[in-house]
Amino acid sequence: MNQNDIKQKQNEEFFLKCQFTAKFRFNKAEKLNYYVWLFCILSAMTVFIPNTNYWVVIVLPLILDLIAFILENYFEREVSIAANLRNYFDAN
Image 1 (cartoon, rainbow, N blue to C red):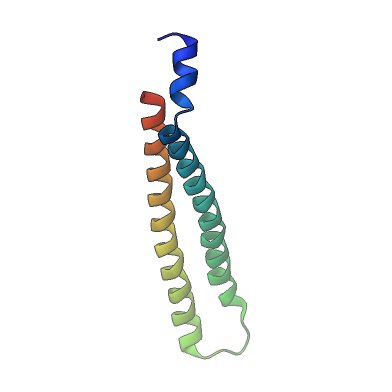
Image 2 (tube, helix red, strand yellow):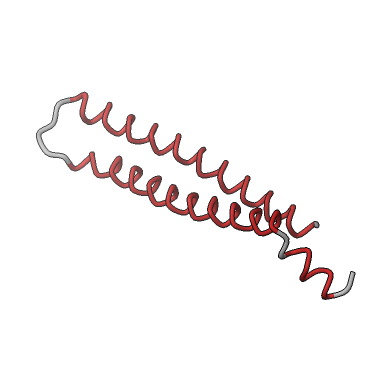
């Protein structure tokens, strides 16, 4: 393949959509990563809540950590899909 063939093929509609989808998913994953960190920090900050009941010290961090865990799994899935799309684009 010469340079003109590569340029023509990478600008086909299907491959442009592939690149767009990969970028969209990477951006979505980046936002999810910020939310994961936010929930982790909030979970750690619950230790400093004064005069709280026992359930707040145990249950609230657990709930926040579970939300962070779910978002982390979703984040990893988005990154994996986006990376596979980029690999497909590069391979073709």
